[in-house]
Image 1 (spheres, rainbow, N blue to C red):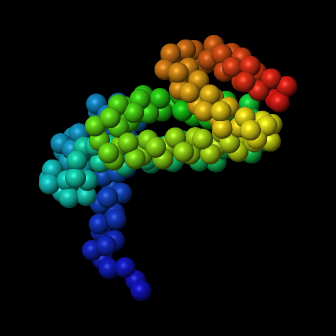
Image 2: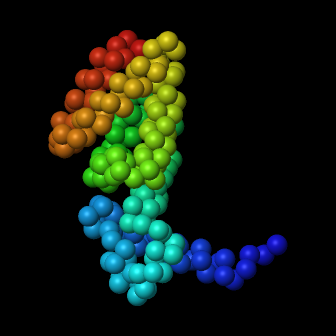
Length: 180
């Protein structure tokens, strides 16, 4: 059954608002995003934005969901565990400020906490897939957790790319040893 015109218009409006929110979030994170700004930039009434996104947090989380889906689409299937982990760390580095804002917001907004938990599950799943061929099954979960914790801490230090990679390779060598 074909969709009704109102349904299509709603989807188009949500997409327009969300695309603009993504641009704002990429440009300046949570601080750059406001319902007023989105409404003004798109020539909409504030109430129209609130109709589709009940709060700034809801709009930010929807934008984050889009950003993370785009950033982590199509991980490399080759390059071994270390290459795939380095790819993931590079991608996370590209959205680190957004990720940190999402973490901070998750302390007070359930919608943010839910998305953050989903992102962590995706990270863990990707790490499991990358590491499973080289890590003993009884160590896999601990190694996955250690890599994720280390990567988050490493990115929080905001080191130059080359220095960050040296630390990452050292940590992976220590964790994986001969399993690399």
